[in-house]
Structures are given as C-alpha cells and as structure tokens.
Length: 439
Image 1 (spheres, one colour):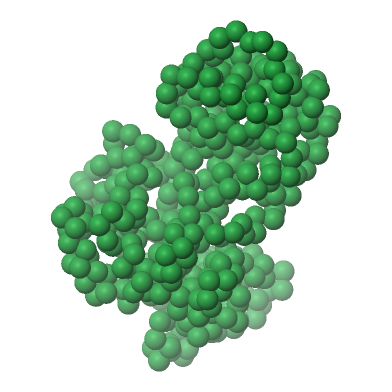
Image 2: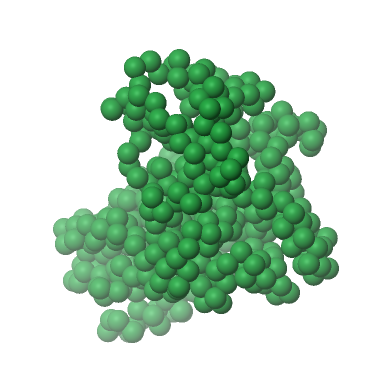
C-alpha cells in the first residue's frame, strides 16, 4: 500500500530537521503497533541522508556490531576498536554530525530496557554535552506506549524534557480510509463502514485487507478468521508486553467492556475486585480505554461509561478472545456464526462512533459526544455543539433508517436543551446512506 496523508506529522518533522542546522533536535514517534510509525519516519527521512537502527532483544555488543556496519554504509570511518556499548555508537554519531547534517532513526527505542537500561542516562549525558555543537536529527520510535511515556514524560527519567516533539500517531481518519478503499475499487459506504468496524483505519490492517482483496464484510471475516491468520493472536501479541504478569485481569476487564459492561460497578460485580486502579492504568498509562460522560454533565458527575478506544481490539475481545476455545481449536465457522448473529446490534453502536468521528473531522463543532440520563434514560446517539455559533445538533443513528423516530428524539432532548438556552437546535436522523454527505 502506498503512503497516505500524515501531512501534519511530515511538516513537524521537516521543521525539526531544518532546525538541526543550528543544533541537534530530538523527535519521538509513538503509538500502538501497526499504526505506521516506521513508515512515517522512513517516508520523511527518505529525502535526506539517514541511518536506520533497529533495537532488537540481543546482547548489546551484537547490536553495536550491526550499527557500526550500518554507519559504514554512509560514512568513511577511522579505524575503530571493538565497540561493545551503545554509548560509544551514539558518541560516534554525534561526532559525525558535527560536520554533516543527517537523520538517525532508532526504532523500538523502548527495547533498550531489555538490552541495557543504562543506555537512557548515557544518551542523556552525551546529548546534553554535545547537542549545541551537532546537526543530528534524532528520531526515536517506540510501540509500547507505557514505556515510551515513562522514558520521555516522567520527570524522574533521564530523557525527560529532551524531546523537541512527541508525536502520538493515530490511525487514519475516515476520509483517509475512504481514499485507501477507493484506490482499491471499494468506494461504497458499506465497505467503508465495515472496514471502520474491524480496523478503525489502522494502516497495517488496511494494507493486509487491500493486498488480499478483502474489503467486503464477508471477505473481511473470511480473511481474518482462518488458520494462521495474523488476526487470531493479534490482541494478545499487542498487549502481553504492555501488561506483564497481570495481563489476565486487564484482559478480563477489556472483555467486559467489549460486551457492554461499561460501568465500573458492572465490572467490579462480575470480577469481584476493586477495578479502579486497573481502569486508571488502562486509561492513563496504556491509552486503551477512555471515559465518556454525557454532553453537558457537570465535572463531578458520576454518570460515565468506559469505552475501548481501538475498534480492532474491541472486536478482538468481543468475538475472538471471548471465544478463545473455538479459536484455539480453529472452529472459525462457530465464531463467524456468533459474529453474524450479533453484528447488527454490535455495528449499531459502532455506527454511532463512526458518525461521532465524522462530525469531529468536519471541524465545525467544539463538542461531539452522546447523552444519557440516570439509568440510561433519554439516550441521544449524537450531540454536536458549536458554542461560538450557539448551535446544537442532535441525531438519532440507526443501521435501519426505518427505525429513526425524530419526534421521540425531540422528547428525549428536552432535559439536555434546558442546559443550552438560546442555542439553535437541529435534529437529524442518520444512517449509512448519509455518510457521503460528511466525507
């Protein structure tokens, strides 16, 4: 799949590169695996002289041998002794950058924790001593969100405050996803929505689906649910390293959220644990869930629901992890039956999130969310507000347009509209047929 968008990120990296004419600059690219961090860095660096270093889990001196060989492809080096420590490789790169401007990409930067944790303080010392005299554009890429957050954003860590930019890479927007699918002959709204449900615009997943011509609902399921499919163990592969020994508890919480147990009290009653600390870490340390309050709710309101922020992981926990016995015995026809049975109700909730994102991407609203009252009464699928223009849009969202009832929506809106006196209200009924109006 060719490179799409990322214009803002490319511009920020380009700005930093231009600044390296005066002194070295450090950028961090993070985000979950498969989101295209390495592709972004390589796309940017391809215009310049660059060195790519990958941190794999092996002895430090073996990594250094690889790195020196890579550096020799780009520079004529003096006779070197046996370099066994990354600090010496980094010192060499800084020395070379005194004479020439270039980019250094260090991929899977968090893996130095497993190689030699002292590397971070060694980089800090060398960076602080040499930054002002060098012309290196250093880009550190990391996939384990919690570790990258710790390395660069916790005040007690040696590299805290050293990064000139920290880019948190997100999946493609719906518009970009539509461009990808259109380029591969699937420009209908149903294919766009189904790809959103299963991938939410994750570039690697879109690449796999487009490469295998799996862009319809049936073809996507057939590709994802087969022996040796990369998707079967994907959730486990993505998260085991993040969670460590307590992954079982985290997986159980995520499974419950995926099936609609979105309140803390519901989670605690099922698991019989105090879930507050786990939920806080899932939200703040791992960025896997988010809390949602009704639009217009007071800051201290206890009305809130948890939501998995990643559509693929939501799908994986709901249908694959929950039916792991069937997955392990490769009874994929059974899992498909369950998905086909539940897809209408499951995709109905996804369609609400789909329109939330579409409305947010228009840039016309400063608030986009949903509304409900105690006991899930008077639910409104979408509320979009423009406080500058004093406009509020309320929408009923249904897969089946025949089930939309605007009169009932207006009645459910009364409690919310009281909180927005003077606002001009607009009520909408939205279904898949309306998607193209917002692309």
